[in-house]
Image 1 (cartoon, helix red, strand yellow):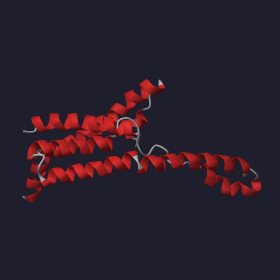
Image 2 (spheres, helix red, strand yellow):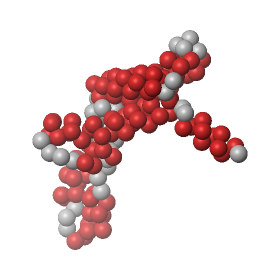
Image 3 (cartoon, one colour):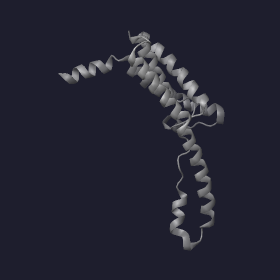
Image 4 (cartoon, helix red, strand yellow):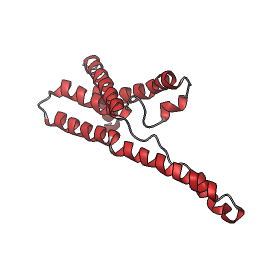
Length: 163
């Protein structure tokens, strides 16, 4: 009986659905944006981190928007959602972006080192330098901004159709 109530609550939770819808929409939009900026279709962008727009920012912004509309902007839960959102967006544009920049530098350094250890004597160590770190981890501030804007719009839409 409890699982029915749980499922019914989840099914009628506009904040949850707005967040999921924002994530999916942001990930799908990355493909045509990548095409227009690089003139190349790459469906893998739909499943990648980083890029325009930030799905993390979209998710937390839509969550805070629906909660703010549903419960009011003076509530503790709205304040918690906003603080949570700020932390996520700061992390996406700051810490994770810098980790991606470090990955780029490390990959370049490993490629240079890899050229010097091509002899048979270093063959076993050469495999170490063939692995590349993931470089697209975080977001530029503009990607976070547009993800947040998209999340707010999705949140407003979902809040009003969810009531």
